[in-house]
Amino acid sequence: MVFGFGKPSPVKETEADGEIERVYHGIKQSMRVSGINLNFRTWAGFENFFPLMWDAMRPLVETRAFENAGDKIRRESVSLAEKLGKMDVRNKIELGESQQYQIQKALRLYHYINPKLLVFTAKVKQALEGETTQADQPELNTELIERGIPVRMYPMEMVADEPDDERLAAIFEDIKETLSLSSINSDYRTLGLWADYLEAAWKQLKPIVQSDEYKTASGSLRETARDLASRLPAVQLSRQQVEDAGEDADKILETTEAFERLLPSLIINVSLLSLDWKEAQELFESPFPAETRKYIQGGSR
Amino acid sequence: MNWKDFQAKQKVAEVGERFVSYVDEGEGDPVILIHGIPTWGYQWHKLIPVLAKQNRVLAPDLIGFGYSDKRDNFDRSIGRQAEMIDAWMEKIGIEKANIVAHDIGGGTALRLATLFPHRVKRLCLMNCVSYDSWAIEAMIQLGHPGAYKFASASTTIATLRQMLKQGFSETPDDEILDGIFAPYTTEVGKLSLIRNATALNTNLTTEITHLLHKIEAETLILWGVDDKFQLLKFGKRLADDIPNARLIEIENARHFVMIDQPEAVAAHVSAFLEEGK
Image (cartoon, rainbow over all chains, first blue to last red; front, top):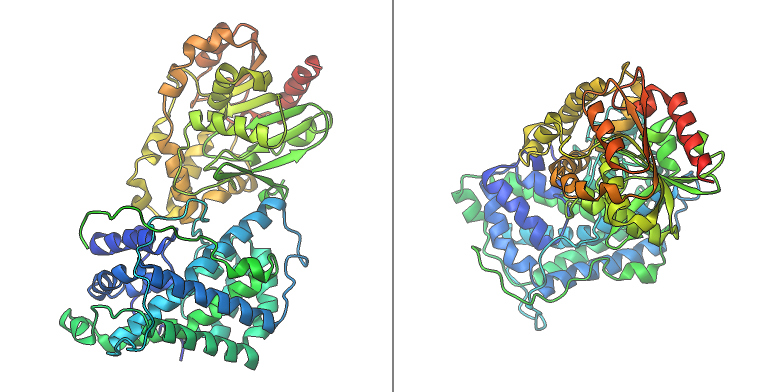
């Protein structure tokens, strides 16, 4: 199936208004991210569901337990990527010093946010499927973490999803075809800022993502995310609420499942690309560790 | 030169929480070229190879501009830019330099020369902002916070591109205009440019007007006489107020004097720098 077929168009940040604008701001503050990934832009197309989902998930994503779950996904991804082989992209092309610096900053952004997105997505899917939280969970760390975009986080800058540059457009088409995507993900659009790099990176990634080892690895990461999500506290979101809000719960679940299928490979790809620049030991650590929140903000939840 | 080749030459330095991308070519006395709005270091691409024959030439992108830091969490005013240039010079080990600056880069340079005089050896200003000469109407409109949602990046850049043509005596090649706007064609780039325009603040030049007479650096003022953005009368006023200043009027040139008359500008700047050796 081509991912995303039949779902509403993603809502760009510049087009967000009213409730969607409010949620986009909340996502950046609570998820601690400099931009709105394709997941959220796509969910925002379901305009009644989107604020309902976010208001249910927000208390969870601000906990240490959620942040820790993202950290575990990140570490497992780096371990899995190490076993898939070493990429050598940066030595294959000429990049200036500033370009190299910025590519690494961009990879750090996605290395941070994508694992959290996967846990988030798995949790939303479980809520919509009516799954309950596992009873045998260890004591959860419900401490609240700081809010706000980490000051050194690279902006989520992206080229257009349908770029004028013919070479870039061809790379995007190939990525979409290979991964059965209807929309190109934020990660690739960001790396499209350095077209030479993306072209060389995709050339090396493409055979890897088609291998059985890779499919096993991404399946393993997905299972870990599901397990971690199931051990997090239940959220106040159900299929019934979604239907009561006038949304098509089946279509939303289908969209959510598609993201849950896609995200593990995005995470592993970023790990593979990052291992070209950094040692695994450094990549095991969160690029933007969250401090404990010192003050509890006011405002509405 | 193609903007992509220019970008590939850029080095990078972290300055506090920000990063600055810059070109660094040649050897000898350091010369720092400071660009204006809405451009980046690329606007100097014709001057750099000429000056780099005799000097070490550095062309930073101001923060919020070009391929320097474009995050939406810092002030981009010329006051902050002057502090950033000071900190960047410290970071890369340059104690003092000749400063060549244009447009708001000139406003930044005036703040350097008045507030960080130990950093400025010789000063060359080109069609720069000063006194209450700025901001021009198009930039004020661009700087409205609502501009982010008013138009897409491509529409915003197309409008600005049309406006900017008034800054040249003859419409430059597409390659140059493509290069000037290349960093701003994304939504993040557009937003950064809007924030840069929001930061245009007349008070940051009027508050140093009373200090201009204290500038000790030898100063050359080059002015494209047909400039409609920064009028010649301000160049004349600067030449009066800065003690060791002289004004050279460049004919058949508008705001982007270094692109309209690259040979004349290169000759004047080279001679000025040689005088200081």
